[in-house]
Image 1 (cartoon, rainbow, N blue to C red):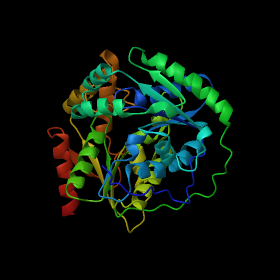
Image 2 (cartoon, rainbow, N blue to C red):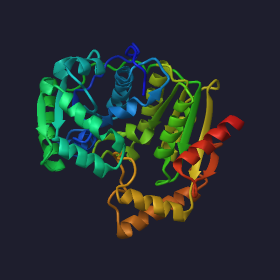
Image 3 (cartoon, rainbow, N blue to C red):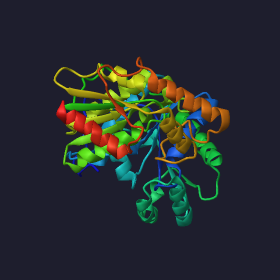
Length: 382
């Protein structure tokens, strides 16, 4: 994605101040699943933690910063937003090749403030999990190769997830995380004044009813712009609001919007001229007011018919589609599934939920790629 280059860490933001639990390991070992579930386990122990998947912070193309630099600059911005909303601990899931790489991802953070947890699994189980996930299957063997190439001796804790149920893995991490928090103590560094935001040239904002596929469309829009050689980045706002029990991003709309604006600023500072944002209607409406007059903004509302929403939500309930954390529709059936579909239909038909001046696109008969093409055509002709 992002080209190799220097880390980009704005001085005004400073380092991460919260104690950190970093979950590392190859794709398929359970980093994101464990990190997300860890929030509830820690909440049971009276600790409010935040979780972020580092992969969500490096979706950029055509800029000079490295993926490591993008993550290193975005985590302090998220640290501020999470800490202001009561976070006591920051959990991150992401690749970390060795101790030097981990230090580059968390510049300025003392090593004893970081608990590095390496999750491992045998090659057959990695392949099985990636197949079950049904996403980016072409990278399966790359994941296996990375697992063999890793030298995780720098990790403070290593857990083989091959034959252990997720709840057992999470319980082990939670025990270690609580001990780490006791040793590290709370964040004591003052946050200081809110840093000024760097705005990109263009912001594309995508909202719609639950189940409309806004994340998939957002990524497709980003991919098409990247294919044209644009300096572009993508953020899924939902993935920036996981705090406390059950991830809870829906209960932290203003925080999610604030985090998205802060990370957008980091991406713009790293050279992204266009940032694509997808999110829930409330977050997008808040972000509409975040940019100055010099920023070109375009908001889109993805409408869908009741039949299309029922079909898409049904697929999500069966576990199809990108494996994003916080998908509360996964596993739904019977009356609960019916209620979820009814809520999405009501959202789709509500004029009040739509962002101001949003362009409405009926996605009922379109693929995600076709929706992205329609959005970009609308953007270039207005």
